[in-house]
Image (cartoon, rainbow, N blue to C red):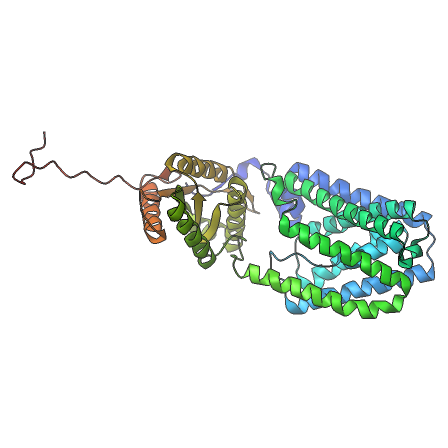
Amino acid sequence: MTATGQTSARPRSAICLRSRWPLLAQPPALVAYVCAIVAFDAVLIAVLAKATPFHAHHLAMFGALTACGAVCIEATRRLGMPAGVSRDLLSAWWLPVAFLLPPVYALLAPIPMQILLQLRVRATVLYRRVFSAAAIGLAAASASVVFHHWVHVPPHLSAGEGGPIAVAAACAVLFTVLNTALIAVAAHASDPEGRWCEVLWDRERVLLDAVELCLGVLVAVVCGLNLALLLLVLPPVVLLQRSLLHAQLQAAARTDPKTGLLNAAAWQREADTEIARAQRTGDALALVLVDIDHFKKVNDTYGHLVGDQVLAQMAATLRTQLREYDVVGRFGGEEFVVLLPGADVHEARRVAERLRTRVGRMVVPTEQAMVTVTVSAGVAIMNVHGEDLIELLAAADLALYRAKELGRDRVCLPAAPVAPPPRSADGAAGAIP
């Protein structure tokens, strides 16, 4: 099936408006949620700014912490931050603002940081930057209100007393939980069928969050002692951020830049490991090769940028429909490959059919039309269609070719081998009835 455009269902003026305002092309629930969070953040800034007296030493501290964040952002820019690399240590500067200054400063702090990230590091869709600033600001302001409720004199944090430091640590955890929750709700509104675990915590995220929280509390203690000590704190924070980004860049080298999935080389290494394990333990294992039907026509009709959007949404769909330990990668062009540890022929076929159905429901909005695609898939089972990765790939490729020949938008297994005719006692082939 070719990519279809349902232009008759949507006026061109609405399509052009969505092209100029990408937020309007998102699900209505996401649009309403983002607008509500941003509006609430803006109203809260206005209310608190009117009620808060601005003192020179508060402004100086806010400016110094913002400048430190800008230095870290500049270090990020020089190192480079490709798509998919998003972790930083900017909480080291947001948390001291929340602890040492009135809550309105916590609402304001993310705004210049997000502007610098957009202008100096990597430009992204504007509504995402605005929503990120609002979500971080609301989480930091909540932590600030709680901290100031229990610690009435913020400089006591730098006195080394256990009580204020414990409150600061608890409020830092509150900041992370609220910020993650706000972002998780947005991600779920964008893709209701996605798994919560993909936007919440895993072991790596928990470790990085713990490092950020500890660093933020320590910077707050040092900043409370003497603002000039930020000159001693800044270099270690920059070094830690560069080390963190270096590790993320190494991980990014294993992924395909357009989809975020494993690239072909990294997928093959992971697949070889899983196949060796299955051969050792005798467990079942299946391989699914998925190809977008008539993808060249999508590129020729709508352009390669739309084609890239289709690839990215295809990858997101695969991730939401597979288990955490399934190995999925982009094999090249419009072809994707999935390794399913522990899956027999029935399970593998069921998963492939689910992927085919889910991709068929995808819609990619463009200025000209709403683009939909279908996929064909070939399934191969270890010890049935092949003994190693090369044989499994060859068998799945044959099954995929068969699916294409039969009309596309279907799942096929390799054709069963033709049984040899029975032979007579003297070795001659027996007659076929």
